[in-house]
Image 1 (cartoon, rainbow, N blue to C red):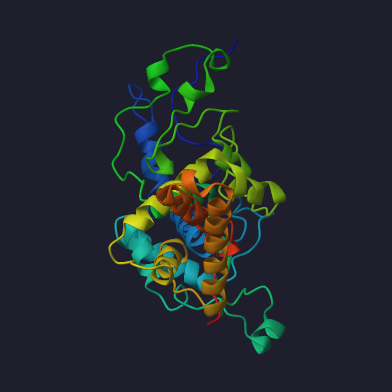
Image 2 (tube, one colour):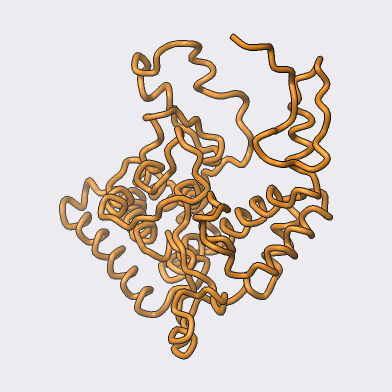
Length: 326
């Protein structure tokens, strides 16, 4: 063994004006102050780039986890520098940075393609249109709960996992690890190898890794989940019940319009309206044709509109941020 090494600052790299470390302290405060110092813009650049990545679907530096020599260069270096300085001047406020970006012209652009621009910049590196992108797993679940009217915006008290105590997860029933919840997805307990099914199917990153950029897949199991899962079926039924109780929708045509606004934030087109009416009427007529004496009209109507909500949930438009041609 050699001599005991006293606490000190980084020595593997040259750090001008390195802070002196109090031998009685841990050195963490000095390290944190150096990491967030205005003289060290890398931290702010990385943070700004991640905010941009989450809002636009791709960072100014595309490799959000790698700003090194093997990472990709920024597409707009001056923009990244300007936002970094603004971020530092605003006291490292994420909310102010988000506000500044979403109020910009670039963020508010349509996603509609332009033939001439596609020829010049097919990858949209120059930000001439919005980038169509799929919602994250959490946003898809929250959107379904919002349509059904079940989303609880309150913050839960404690965690269901903490209440289970210190024991092996494999000895605990899944219902206790993931109890039914209508809270926002950000509050759901995430246990390694036991993530909720909707998260697993829609590319939730591994809890064992630090991932600044998620994979985005489009596979049949995602559509099958939205079509057949018990969670989606229950929320579609609750959405139908909510729709039938809505005083602003008094007939089938207005119900179709209201359901489409809830799910897709727009009015339905004439073909969509006709298809929805055909689906609803077909289910009602099929139920009445079995045994009219035992048919409950309220239950039949709820089933018919549930089918329409499941149809809305399975559309690509529900899962993707994209403009639809009028």
